[in-house]
Length: 596
Ligand code: GCB
Figure 1 (tube, rainbow, N blue to C red):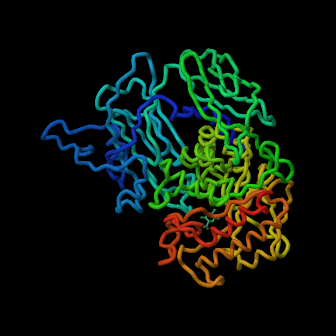
Figure 2 (figure 1 turned 90 degrees about the horizontal axis):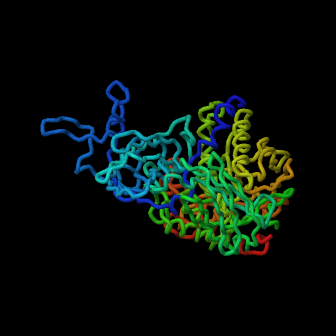
Figure 3 (figure 1 turned 60 degrees about the vertical axis):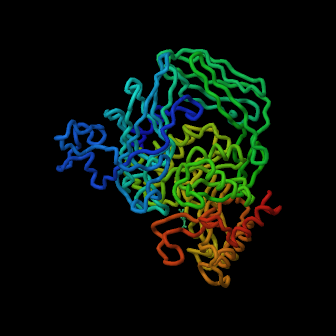
């Protein structure tokens, strides 16, 4: 592992050169209809002996020269289209189960601006691998289905008929992150916004503006410029408070700052956001940022210095009412609105970074967020290439959301099997997360392990490097009857807070029966009743995230007439129907017992 870190760890942070807050930059949205070609054999990329086609195949954007030209690797006017953003699976019945490559093409005109400027082609996410071509030239590729990426295209654009072509491949691989076995639908495609971002030649590439660790009135952070004019004066201002800092960036375009400010702190009850301006000589960006502190003290979690109990629910990025990947603000608002109505002050965004719209809305609506990377179940722990992929996704997630007050926890893994290689892998990720962002808490969802009879012992060795311990337990579902919770107690070897990161049971909405009949709403509600009683007896428990807000599509869930390829542990169905368990949890979250 030392070797792995030497090879990959040290350099990742520098490699993350994402443009911070792209929605606040000038540019052109490339959302809309993109022509698409399904390519299950990847014949648009490899020749018949499996050699990559030298000019990029379909990426070359060639058209037949004349009537006699038999060239076939081409998009024609009749080539059908899909909507971007959007998973392909839910746009056409024949694509529901598709795992493979689809080529996307979008043509657009581009009016260059007068002053020297630069253009970046930015993707919110493409699941899982993307190879990108602009006007026939390959500009780059990206692996990882849930984080943004960009390529500089300055000098490649024309006034008329530019073509962006992207090969997106969602095949699962054992050496991918996540690996082949997951418990969610493998939605493929250009699942999030695509944008041409247009910035000045030297621009504000990235910045972090947060409360200084341990302080409630000192704003601290850094700014990084990209371009030839890297030495500049940069002013960071919070106009509403009248506070600001002025710094000079160095040869590397980087400067740190800190300044005092009298702030109304962000919290779920008062999700105050401030307009923040970052102004360099050649560029200017505006953001809306909340300020809060998050820390632990013994087994407590402290928000703005005061103990807080995380009343949470886990959410998949599954669209309400239609299924499919969430990409719109309206859908994100529905999901987070349900969580608020349930009485939550906290959401676990499972099991991968969700669309940026979720964390922005969580900022605005007042929900603390657990954000995680898809290091899920059985990852190849001994494989340095896999470690590099995981670390890259971690760094991209943190890079994107480091200014979101709502995000209080970075999670490095979910339900991974015990073992030395795994613990080293995850400890390195935890260390990396802390290095990239010392202002937030680090966690992971671990599995429960039996101790003495009727005791669950929180002693996963990974706990040593975590700030907050996460544990997924399914007493009443995978683990015994609901009543087992009555005789189960929890112990820990750590002086750290515990968040029960999952618990739940499965029932299709409307399936009624006795409390003792599995798959009924009554059974699910009974599990929640026994869970609530048990959870309240754990002295070091500082939060919980019920599994899960809404039913979600899942290829592993076969039971005909019951699951039908949906995981039905939702408190609401995918059609928004509230199940009996919803009310059990809602009653608890609205009770004084949960307000501690
Ligand atoms: C888990 C996993 C989650 C599954 C859930 C289930 O422990 O973390 O991804 O969907 O259990 O429903 O079994």
